[in-house]
Length: 355
Ligand SMILES: [Zn+2]
Ligand SMILES: [Zn+2]
Image (tube, rainbow, N blue to C red; front, side, top):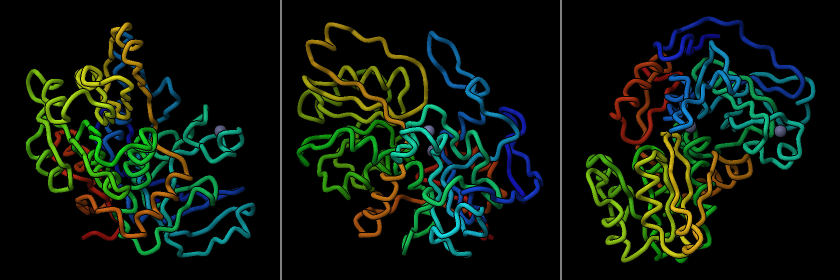
């Protein structure tokens, strides 16, 4: 097999030849057809997270080992499987979305199909090789989801950006469809969040970003209002657009600046769901937390249950498509660098058969 791997932190991805793995136990081997390029790949590639005054958290301290084929938005074709995966409906040639947020496979959370909440995460494309490759090993057949009639490049994005926003939005529901939900960030996740909210029948969506071009894309995707977060006074602008203090914010950037203006805009009983990995820290005025009865909740990707639910919503035709650019797998490095420079609207999906 070939892979486009991180060999050294912060250095260009290298095309490498590895022996094609042979699936054992419950494992399934797939040939990769689509691999989405996600912003969190940049953190893996850079090798660290910014914890504000607590310094940096190295990915190597979390157990990430190089060389690594990143890529956690994968669609592929089933090639073969281990003996324990027999009798579970697998057929050679089946096209499947890969759920990448796998855990140890044996704890209570994994058994409850909340693999993303496992304390011993073994996520594909992070702790094990992922989709920037010709082949991928998946731990169990239940991590594979049938995309049905969906566009496969778009279906790939549901494995991360799709379930990430779906799971975050689920943490705000139920809400009156006409009450504003603020989405901070109008990149791939932001546009996916707008699509999911529309599919769920939500009518008031406020998109916030520092890029006029991305805010245009958010409008085109169905945001009812946009707020330019450049300069001062973002909290005031947000409250003005929302008609008062805000009850629901999903921060898809989650940096020191965005967390602060989001927190400051919250009203009584308001909730801030933190999703992004931009980094930094938030210092909280503690009396306001209590007096306003504010909730701040983190949200990390999603579960296999959520992936299946989201794919079902998409198959019903209710989920608008986000802009997707297809490129050959061998462009993995340049795609990542364009994402780093902020030049990507929507999603780049690498494909095995693009010219
Ligand atoms: Zn991702
Ligand atoms: Zn587990």
